[in-house]
Image 1: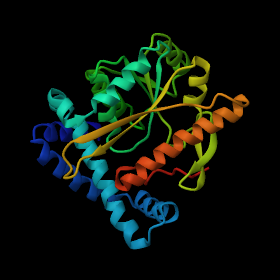
Image 2 (image 1 turned 135 degrees about the vertical axis):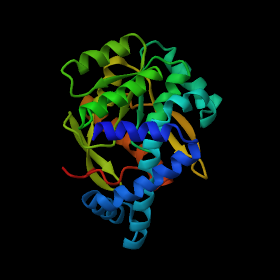
Image 3 (image 1 turned 60 degrees about the vertical axis):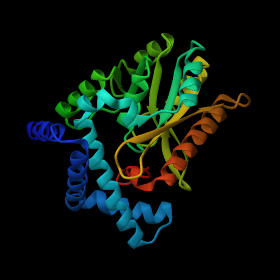
Image 4 (image 1 turned 30 degrees about the vertical axis):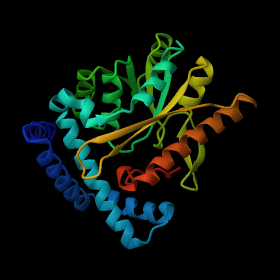
Length: 285
């Protein structure tokens, strides 16, 4: 299966990007048909949490799977996209200056995002801007595919810390101490220290690593999201600094920060619902 995926990636990488994206959309639609469990979960969660009717949920779920297919096509295309990444993924100068100023404080930067848009290209674009960038990621179910994705990240100057690795906490602290930018995605229910905060009006188990590490290091927090351009080719990135509360007990502050960051992810999803992974069991616990 992995070798087949590598062959498919090589085929996609040889195509012009518009053709590759069109193929990715088609593969996404096929995946939706085959993934009955994910499709039904996506549609049910769209109805329950986004508040749309069943017909609209079906329409949106098609877009969700198409977007997943386009993300896969762009990851396969990364060696070629890297040559023009600044144009393919635009990052406003004022946002870049803000991120640079946060980094110059010398305590590292907690960069919070979610599985919105092509989060892999978001990380690549930030690394391309000259930052020492590290992403905290969950290991892929297929170790060969996971290693391939880690290799793709590394080619763009982005290091990966596997959150399941026993050395993960030490590696995160090491990255922060040297002033790196640590990317953390907070929008999935994973087996890490978490608390429940509102997400689309319902309690969702959410990792507390970003809030706790920011408090421990007194490090700045920046949120960033990527959105596909009208027409489907290329992306736009927007960044914003977050000012955490300075009063209250530590546990209360961790909860407030985690809830605030989750609210920003929700706002990004609401702005472009088909660019989020609605097939993920976000509210399973």
